[in-house]
Length: 611
Image (cartoon, rainbow, N blue to C red; front, side):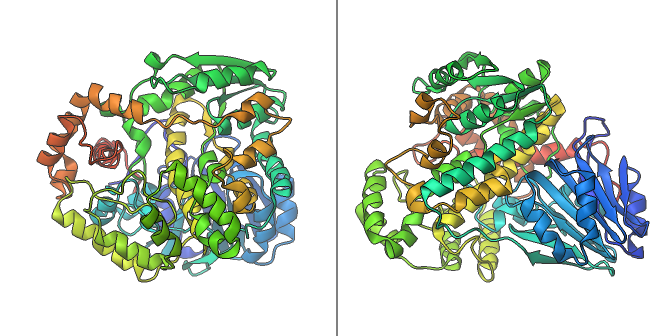
């Protein structure tokens, strides 16, 4: 059963109702929990929920009402002006494409409603048929509570896949009767309470040369940071890799004092602190704080104490103490807002899968870059050629992935030119779980389309979706610590500016993240732009497993996943009692641990959303 703790520190949420009489019972149930309410122009309830002060802005003109919910700079006057020009929900496109920041856009137009999230998974839109009306929300568990819905065990089984479930399974809610909008769609609710998705966004054609693209990307990222920093005296930032370094440098240009935090990893090869010190030496208004490696909690530390109620299993929950260390330190020093570099890797490092298209459009450049990537891998020659010349559609790739769920994981040196990394179920998954996931994949393969026609863009958008969904939940954890966690790289305008750059310029083995390097010249100190390294975290994961073995073994006792018939607890216990087999990747336990923790946390809910 979905639910929230009855606490002032509970997560923000909102529900959107259609403008029809059949929502009377739903609105009555919601009012037991909702603290804020905004009505349709007709007077019927429209937005109900619990949200922090200042994140909802509303404008109204005649029979049109427009609301923006999230991190934005849109004023009520601007929304009122926009509302005065709108005749249909489709007329909101211009406003949507001009918004800076990260926010939901909701409009009530003469009895019809438009509900829209973002391109990434930070601002999601869920919907469900409740009684005679389709209802939307920004949290799946709110709708599950209204439906009195149970966990969908088949969808939960797909969450055991490693590294992640493939599109479209990854984004599907794990509640029966609850659905989610796909990337680039908004939901229309008509006056009879019916709902339908409408496509409004597609990735841009990647044709912009580097010089022009770098200027556009600098403008987009600068605006994204400014909209968050404007008017503040103090903010905080991560200061680690090149992505967070760029955000930190932009934050200093807004006049606010910046608290910058760098975590020194235990891995001897981690060099974040060295580079961070060089950056700080070239910036003003930065108060730099270094967290020693032995003060940083390990992966899996604190998992038995985690009590955040997420609306889906959250990968960050396997190291809650680690995720919250910096936000808690920043909040204690008075920071209301913490900027991160989340999203930079997916957009700026990009995917070598672009070579698949490039070989057909720019073969000479593709061959040159292919040699570089293959040498770095190193990629086996035969498999590289197979992926490069294979023209299978995404549906065919998905079927093949479903057929090989229990095969050995792909070797680390496997080329990255396909539609993605074929996921695997862990050896402790039961035969029933394997068959359930295989059935889901085969069913999806009948109708699903890739997120983009080009493999490279599909892989990048899929990674953004998966990682931004996790960031959304980390933000919920940070909110309980007292500050807003934000990720400018996941903003729509920033994503568009990045994806528009030609892949032969943006994704190359010869330079590390060339787009951000060119975009940040004159903003980030020159010395910091020469960095070519990034800490990848496997060292801490292996140490964490060794030091937190008792915590992991405790999860095997009375396992909820085993109770559902999805895992063999004895096999999992055996795996957790010794170092991971070389045949398993270092993150093989992640998905299982977070699914088990999520099921246990559901049982602790003391106050549920009324159904």
